[in-house]
Length: 94
Ligand SMILES: [Zn+2]
Image (cartoon, rainbow, N blue to C red; front, side, top):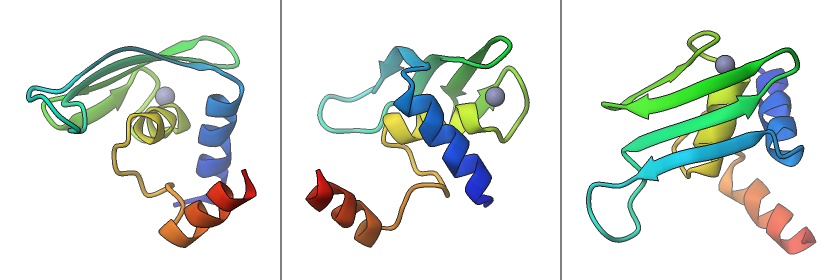
């Protein structure tokens, strides 16, 4: 996984470019949403990110920074998520 993908995904989150329109879990409680619909404002156009039937997709292409930004913000697993040690460091810094 390239560091560039992670940098771009975090930049989308930081700049407020990610809007989650719908995130639904089938059962009550702290579950990851099984359905996610989000819009990521890109440099040239908006990108529609969908998670349904266990699959992520984006209107631009299969594996992009838009999709990983939405995975991060909805708690879904993504290879670009920092390790738990790094997360702890970030929390301490805040
Ligand atoms: Zn995309």
